Image 1: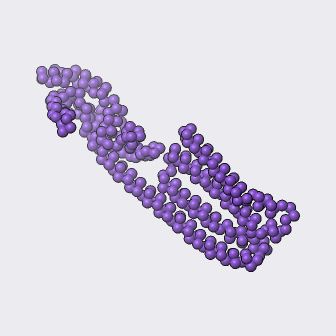
Image 2: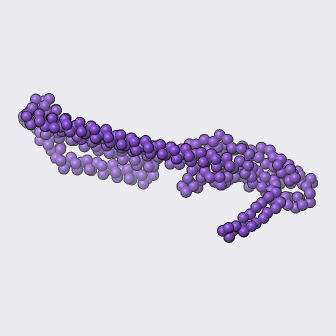
Image 3: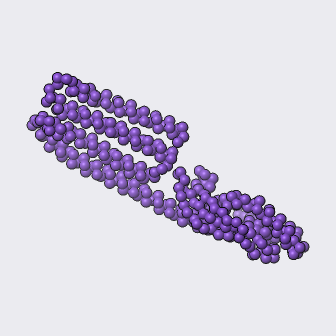
Length: 314
């Protein structure tokens, strides 16, 4: 992780700890526990609902602090390392919130039941227990609703992401197949430049020789790299092996593989035809190979060319 991520992580954990201590002090939980635990305190008083509730409240606040620290750590590290999809994080948050809500709602009931088990039974406790039992049933229903809603939202989010990724992969597969047959030629017999609609010129080249082209693309697969999707594939290259009059005479001469990330803005790469074409051209060092091929082909076929071909191509 970066130093900035570490800074926010440590700062957030410190804030969570300070809020935890403040909550304990504000509600007088530690003081209540200490007072009712003093030597000489009657057993009936020490086992009453109030100190038991204070102990349960401290347990809850401790649990809240620990879960908050864990969830905050998850968010900060995931933003930096991206090891979990956002829908997983949302689902985890929903389950954690549901659990904490149910836990907090059951505190009074647990305190009363523990007091009752200790022999501290009064008419007030009995009536209060009935009230808390109804409250607990309502809390369970609410907790279940929170879990269901969070799982539905996270599931729909995951589905939409997977659907979009599948569409992007299909489009990328179509784009990479378009570079098959794309060639780079050293010289051209004819070059026409015509004015375009935007005031620029559209250049049409024909009769190029010698040429290096993408012969085939195979073994296309996708992986994940950080926050980006990566497409990898194998390719073969063909080159001219006959004279200009037989420009269709080609042979395989090289094989390679490459990978491209899906975000041009973030990585300078992309899955469109032009980006993939440029990447193969760069990694296969086409310009250098094309110059070498021209020298070899001109030496080999020079005396079999016409005078015009010699002037254009060699």
